[in-house]
View 1 (spheres, rainbow, N blue to C red):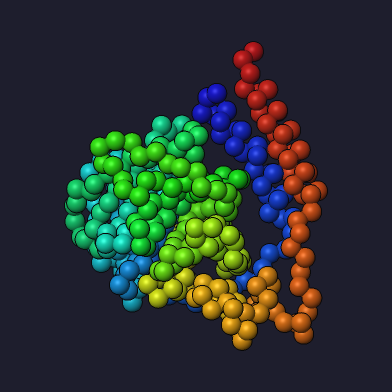
View 2: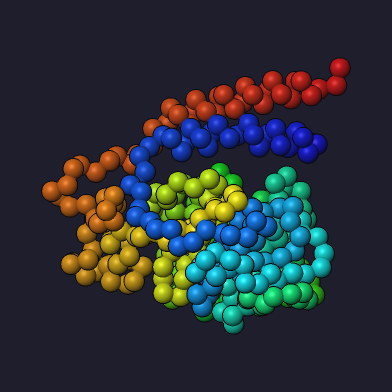
Length: 332
């Protein structure tokens, strides 16, 4: 199948996902506040976010050279550009390493035709050229597009999430090999169409974001512990968790803003390990706009069951589009 045909096939399944996404209610939006806006005109497609020692790091989406921007939230200015030689295929994510370095994920693969993907280790906040250590990763079940890179804060184990309608979490060996190919292992299914993710400081939970929602998981069980509806962003592709457990989100776009989001009390209690406290537990399933938990005195919770018809209708439309486009491509 040609690249164009692959792209058409990918577009054809989009209505399935859209039908599913509109099929049911989502949690209420969380509170948020603007921390800063990227002031550097070179940061136009922020894809991936990390925070450490009061500074933020980001990378541009595919098409940029190999570089990481370190930004001071006081005024949004770039205080360091860490660069390396070579042309990345598609850098999509970054994640902090336990020793203070930063891991850059050249893991994008829109056409799912890469034999392997690459990680690069660079120092956090270094201004100038560096010579990064590189690691090659390979999936056990063929190529996947991905935009999410996770690093466990204690063990340093690296994980990648495939950006597909069935999201899958893959783990690399705990000790990465620079000389050979590191084979990934499938751990389980997670959020579909994930655009970024991050572990919490204690390593017992992580979060994955999509374009409009974020889902929180327990580690290593992969049990979902909560979901929030994210504030609107032009193309939200970044999420980071600070050393204090605060959650930040970012978006592509020139002068885009980094937001700090407030989590519902019951979800924060779950993440902090105090969910068994009756004064803080509440109803884990429903959240109010003000960040509190619903009680029996609040209006009835919305039904989160997703009906089948939008998914099915979207799928039929997608199939018809695919048939028409492929017939148009057929040699005559």
